[in-house]
Image 1 (cartoon, helix red, strand yellow):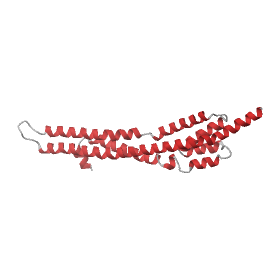
Image 2 (cartoon, helix red, strand yellow; image 1 turned 30 degrees about the vertical axis):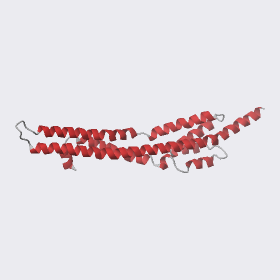
Image 3 (cartoon, helix red, strand yellow; image 1 turned 180 degrees about the vertical axis):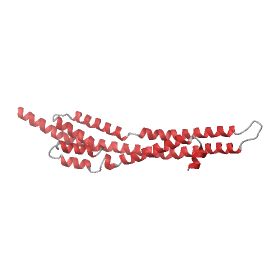
Length: 217
């Protein structure tokens, strides 16, 4: 590996930096975007079961919010109903929408950087190719002779950097697309969960409004 780096010349160092950044981001996103940390399968059913007869306590809502990204969205809706019993359905939907937007933004963290690595790596490899071509032409003398060592070094720079840039860009682009698809899937899950929770939570708001109205009458 060290001999390859030496043969590739200085243009390979930005590519090595991109490879380190890309690998770090892939590992971090792979851990963060696990389903158990974003949208556990049975979480919505458990929340509906717990809130079937009454709203949970503040401690339970806090634990729900700390469990996962979907839990934070559901907890936002629960807090709004607890804080404002007369909440309207439109307002509750807006609460879920805002909470979901914040969660999606957090899930997309570092994806732009990973996409930049996938885009910049081939360009950096192309830069190495250009530098190698300059080395090759520089090895040719006006009299027709050439320096074989400098010629070989220029070819090494051109080929190694091109190959290394593609080796970084292809996996980075694949993981970027994969993570983007996962986030889109989680976004749909959170939207569907919010759609189920809105009428479920509005039962409590309607009951309290109705009780308040009958008392006044």
